[in-house]
Image (cartoon, rainbow, N blue to C red):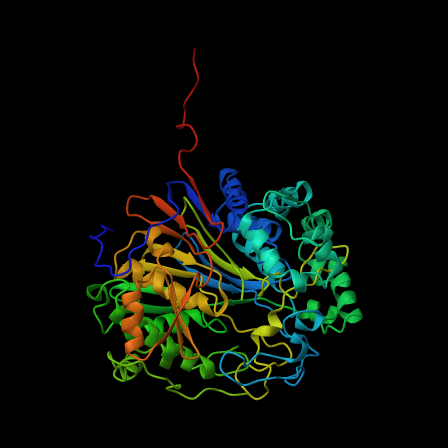
Length: 558
């Protein structure tokens, strides 16, 4: 696809990183050592699925605040034959969980999930049944080519030998030092002598290396029906948690068909409920399609106003209409219908910010990582995985090095709602492992961490690429907006004049140093070139592969 000249821009910015280009494979993750692990699998003859799983295991070591085998997530896989599927390995509520298990403190916007003693945030009662290990191993078994033991070797090496702590990891430890200090294992590992690990320190995780070796030998059963599961269940029983061995044995992944939307001649493909991204990105793009977004200019008051209003509409509908489809009837077709978007668009006022309520009725009843990998054969993986909050529940299972998730926070602790807790219910998520096609050919794959801000940020990257005709690097690094509870957050690169113009329309604007996390992405050019990009908001690094084996029949002669 020939890139058109960049559209007009009100907000100007400088990209802090450079993209990478190759022809034989690409691995982009939020840590250079994880990108190296993925590229190692590609260089060893593995495919994109092998590389993605290797990168995810490596991230559990080098990004312990973001992802772990006791977490969950979504993997959007496109195979070389052009077929798509989403492996849902999101966590589920334990069998003993109930809608009334937490003492709720508030129902105000932005505080609906506040509970007494933060029991749904920190500690054993915040932990949901993990799905990450099972999902990664199933993806490898179904679509990969290399043995699990080989794919685990980079992660085992990083855990046993250690790696150098980055400033980003050090800052995350510092910001969460109070909660980390409550757990003896995490305090010893991350707060030696009572102080957070400094950049440049070496972090060795010997117990975790042994756990990964056990997984290499026994596969996922080491957790779901084996010794690691026994250790997790024992810790839960001793500390008031709800997960038992029966919960682990019952856990199953789901393979889902993606949501598909159309936007200005592009096909937008993303995960379905219980993820909100596929449905609501399609919904917001349908709303924005009624405007010439490119002509308004990136970062203009008009363009930001429309983004903010579309976001508010989507979140109003999301609150009542998207959840685990096994428990709540989700009106997917209505939400992604262009006629419904036209109804909502007609209510937008260009000169005034509005408060929005849901346009349909529903069925009532904070931190992540992302990997984008492609191989030379056309297999592509866009996977978002997490232990939810930074360092999850701030709980490490003794003797295993495994850090537990705090996925129970994703449920609404109030009973009788679409997102309320129920035994076995899958957590709701904003993860957005997205792909964009043009005339059936893959053009972009992207994703990022960032809790509720994930899919709005992915939407903005797609608009940047299609409407504002940005390069891939520009699209992932461009300043972002976000709105919740009547507040419109603007990253600092937006001019003050834009902020004032938005305030004049009724937006209550605040400045934010960062909205959501480090996005990474791959662009697929017509000549077969792969371009990888990662943004400044994390340690993201693209590793490109070109070249290849010698020409068939080549011989060395003196």
